[in-house]
Image (cartoon, rainbow, N blue to C red):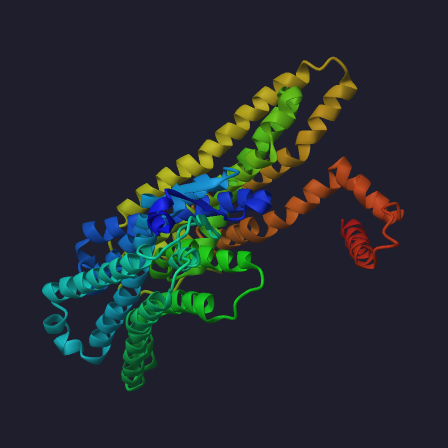
Length: 529
């Protein structure tokens, strides 16, 4: 009957994880950071590829197409999903659900085909290098990209038409974060055998066939690489494929685990796997392709993050001392998560930008880094091209992400000291200042070391710079727990309770073992100091 058809459903309820609202808040912060990283990383890659003539090659053409897919794919469901995380009841209209399902399926299929085209490009580059410019012309690249996009969208159109002509009998609760085709298909109350057959055939042709072609390409590529006489030549040949191969493994590994694993008893597990595949994987592609040295990326990202976190901690101390009556109102758990997520996200985004700019420089075969590890300034010295853009980007990032947090910290402590000096009693002033002393000590150690490292006159002996960097990177982090633990009354009280057995852990063997370990470590620290 007409009233039982899908036209009776004007909107859908997305179940998500609303029974675990606290977990949804955590997912909101994580997914927001991941989405920002996806947009920033892929957008930067596309802009760099368009602006730099050296990147106008088939490999980077396909990479820019992949970045566009990742941006469009995540944007098709992420904004609405993030909004739904903040609501107690998530709804989506029928047209929006249909469009969301169509785009996610189309772009996922297109990515499978595009990865196969990129594998063919690497095959020609390594196995038929003399014919590369003849085979991989601009017209050929456009045709392969257009075929990938056209086939992906045509398949999604077919699957959507077959799905939306099914009867739904008024069922409108989708047990997922967004309108994923398998989750929507479960609502149908008619015969879905044709849909299952169409999905199976499409999966075989548009997912497994590209994977087989990719595997065949890499068999031929590896055979060609092993025929290269020198080890350096083999490394150089394989390095042109390593990023693409990593993306293929991540993409197909995730999608295979999602669809081929035994069905989980808890449907929330399947939702989380789909969320990882749809949100996390696209954010990894620019990192995999642009960051050939993850060590440098991590040291720069985490160093920047620490600057921002110290500023956030200064704000926390400012609120605690200058606005104590509003402390619980201003420093909520959600606010703390947002400040931490912003610090981590900004740090990793800045490191991504600096790393992309660095690794697109020519290096002319220079590969000896005069340092203990891959520090960005040491690596930058190897470049044989114009590094003015890199120097400008580093200078701007330093001003915004290092000096600005320092100024905010100084401003916080000016206000904090003004508030402390207004306290009438000496005991009250000591108590107020004691809540800041540990953080202030860490700030002085951190910024003092980093300022001496980068602002001092250049040492005649480069080993001096290496030792200073080593102190900043290894010794300074080891001081933080000591400073915060041994100069914090609450931590001291907790350790004293453990030493005195005052935590009532006798009935909890695992907690008792943990407390014994903490006590032993504390006594070791006391002995050393």
